[in-house]
Structure formats: C-alpha cells, structure tokens
Length: 393
Image (cartoon, rainbow, N blue to C red):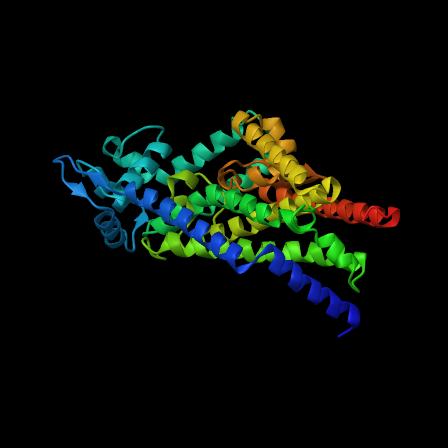
C-alpha cells in the first residue's frame, strides 16, 4: 500500500471518530429506535377497531384474522361475491377490499355491485386508468405514451390478495422516515468542514505531515462513508422494528393490492417497491451530502453553514406544502424532500421527454439528481482548491 493511501486511511479513521464517536452513534441508534417504535405503535393503534355490538378487536386479533383469511386469496369473482354478502366490514382485509371497490367503482359499496360489475372488475380498472391518462390536466400524453401505459396496466390480469400489511405500512411510512433520517445524518456531518471555535481541527492538521489536499479528500470520503453507514443502518433498524409486529408475509404480493397504489401501472411487488424506495432515498441522501459539503466549504463557519442548510430545507418544505405542479416538475422532483415522497412515483404517471425519449419521473429524478450532486461536489472541490492556493486554508 502506497504512503498516500496509508495517510488517507489514517485521516479517514481520525475524522470518522471525530464525527461519529461511540456516544454520538449510540444517540443516533436510540433516536431512530424511539422514532420507529413510536411510529409502529401509532400504526398498530389504527388496527384496533370495534364491531357494531361494541366489541373491541385488538390489533393482534385483526392481523391474525387477516393473515388467516387472506391466505391464497385473489381479487376475483369468488372473493367479490363472497364479500358482497357480508353485512359489516370489521377486519382489515374486509375494509381494504371495500375501499378498493369504492375506488374502482367511484364510490360504490361492495353490496351495491351487480354480477355484471363484479365480472368486469379488471376491465373497469383499466377503463379508470385510461380516463386518468386522458383527463390529466398537467401532461398531454402522446398516443404512443398512452398505449405504453395501458399495455403495462393490462399485464396484470389478476391481483393476489394475500396478507401483506407489514409491507404496506412500511412503504407508506418511509415517506416520513427517510427525509427525517437524511436531515438527522446531515446534522451529524456538519462539523466535517465547518470550523468550530472549541475544537479547531485545521490548526491540528496544519502541524502534521498530512497535506491539505489529502485532508480535504479524506474529509469528503469520510462524509460519504459515515453518512452511508448511518443511512443503511437507520433503514435497517426502521425495517426490523416496523416488521416485527406485522411479519414478513406478502413481500411478493403486487402493490396493486394496496388501495393507495391500486391504479399503479407498475407491476411490482412490495419487496421491489421497498428496494426502489431505499435506492431513491440514497440518491436523495447523496445529493444532500454533496450540497452540505459545498455549503460548509463556502461558509466555513459551522453555525453559518447550519443556517443556510436549514433555509434550504424550509424552502423545500414550503414548496411541498404549496404544491405547485410546475415547481415540482422542474425543480422539487430532483430535491431530497420531494424525491422521498415515494408514492407519487407509482401513481402519478409523471413523465419527462428527453431527446425524444419518455422517461418516468423516478428514472429522470435519479439521473438528474445524481448529475446535480456531482456538480455540487465538483464545485466544493474546486472551491477548496482555490482556498488552498490563496492561503485562506
């Protein structure tokens, strides 16, 4: 191993310990654990329901009933006809099926369906998807694009309806957890380049044999290494705590068995959806870290960097609350907050036309956000190089 590589590894170890001490890492795990546990508890409370006679159904009973009752089921004529004969819907599998029917038939209850409507369930779903494409007020799809979407939607001729509550809840709540995780990690990484009046690491390194360029490179690598460990560690802990009470059943079920993504044209499983969310979230994290590095390099002082970083996230939050389609389409879709609002990738049917090709919102967001992150990182490296030449650092 060359001397420069030894220096680099040594600095990365020192910087990693400075940023992520045992105490800080333990604090990180505790906060993620508490958030995940509280979020899981609130989700479980929604499964506590009461029947018409006032009997309380606990979440354990609700989930156990659904796990047993949904085994081997699919949304077909037999299931719909059986559900139509029920007087009340108490358990989660029954209420979920009822909500899907209401979506598909524009507010109709299962009990109101005729035999003909039950038999044309999937034709009705395709018709509703076609109407959504035709009536989209923001995007004028070409005939080729409409045919592509419709062909994708037509591939799903039957939707399995096995138990998959854990995956439904997990993928839904990732839109809340992942942006908070990214912000938390960014706060921990703030001292990487920002100077601190109490601990001035710059003076320490100036007196050592390590060069300034090596130090800058090592700090950038440290930010990505430490950040990545925290990101995947946080996701893993959230996943475990979330799935313990629900179980792993249903990973290979299609996301269309969930009322939120019932009209999705993407025929993917809950497991694939989870990995897609994790991947998109990591790209959002990568962009956020690159931006943070640039801010801390330019602002120099840690408190100044923190103020600019907070203002950036407040701006994203305001855009998210206002929901202006053009702002989202041309800006917010490539920023961390909107990128981690995962549901719109699966039901929004938003596209970008790039050099004659139609790209889905997810694909283009990943590509453009990665490109922007690379540009931000190059700007940060260039700024540090200028500072070294001028003797500012």
